[in-house]
Length: 221
Image (cartoon, rainbow, N blue to C red):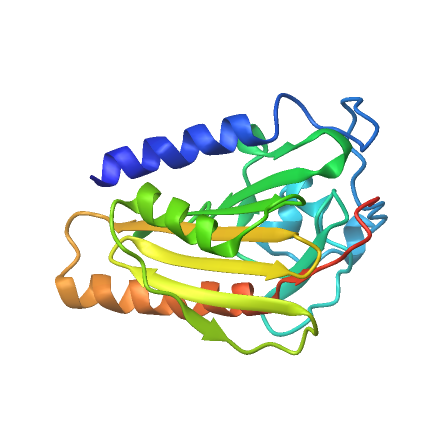
């Protein structure tokens, strides 16, 4: 089951945004976030040591300990990005006219817990209930979501947990939506207790990322 889920998520990442990177007018150019941070000012953390990931980060000042502000290239949303993770350039996609975007990220150095996270943005989703059904189908089980309270007005956030990872669903009254999901797997040799501890720590970390997501009606970037 886990292998089928992984394959499905990778295929989704590759096809959602189409080929290449759109700058919003249908052309395939990366717009970036005009990050002009000088090398000497950059924090010595994984997120800033990866050139592609750095393009998304808008400040070298953390928004809270261990997290830096990220703005999607579509301009559609922001989130608190973990300093010890990087974006997978090979699977990143942005759709024509910034109508969709897929941001996959992972831990490049964590040898004990293999974690893969995907953030999918859509500007045209009609129903959050249909998205919940879609997520349940992807994971092959009925998923129960719980409401997360955030300070963003007109935005709704829900969270769910499975044996293989965590999920988030964020939407607003403008039919914009983000589907956030992760998969993790402990390496062989770890005890059940060690694995459970790692998964719980990762769950809380990713839950805080989900809570930090903020959608914006202006999607011009």
